[in-house]
Image 1 (tube, rainbow over the protein chains, first blue to last red):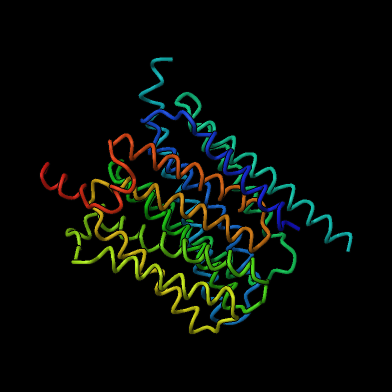
Image 2 (cartoon, each protein chain N blue to C red):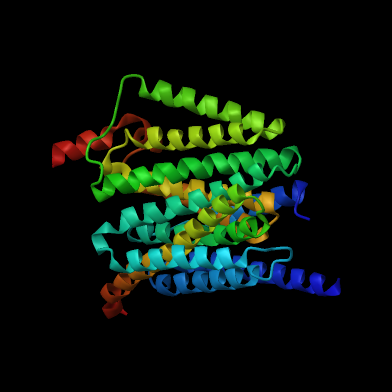
Length: 97
Length: 280
């Protein structure tokens, strides 16, 4: 389905998007943006779920379970932390608008 | 049969939507006025992608899956809400390490499962596993250092040579696994080596430089997620992972530049530690 050059094209275009999307980010947003992109790779949860869903042996089940738990931690923790950071951001910025 | 095809279409459409939401979310997060809504957009994409994955055809172990999500999610929720604002960087490191660990776990399940995907998938699975495992243990060290669990900076003579040899050794084992159909013991050795590499790479770096290092591991986790996305044929993981990999790499350079340092300087000199010691 996704293989060979199609995969390479997706990879290349997505890399450009990632580069462009944060092209001129101000220094104050460095840490929140790092946290935000940390949340986005929490999508690994989807893959961990599929891996656990296909697991058969005890070994695979244990690793899959750990994988899903870690990925869920990445996604939820990443969201909570980013949201708190950006919330603080707004209260100091809100008066100027 | 038609039923399976339409479910498949629904899943792919949802992943497509999630990818769009992630990219727009990141775009909004890069401007001060729209930053707050950005995380909400990305969060919506994550919810859509996660919920639709329960419909993935041919899956079992739903009970275990739900327990794992609840366990990881609730612990992260509580820790994320409770942590003090000043302790945010190490929490990012911790959650990032968890993502890297998850990518390594996917690689481990695929490699232990012993299904032969062919050479390309073998290489991508092993590479993703290597990067994910390094990011996992490295991020945990970064967390421990910033949290104050680890006070001293460990350095020994010839550490960089040791790291280089360890990297070469790990890559050699990785190459063997990707080409030959390696058994459980060799795959285990590979993951142990990768985890040690992450630790020894991060140990000599001083606390003042940690934000740059965390950003680097963040980019690496993104890359690992993208590689495992190729292995699992999952477009959402490929796109989100690659976008984070590229954005994270650029961000790492910007952060290093803001400190008037080059990335190589941060990684290999241990300068930040002496500077921090002199300042404090």
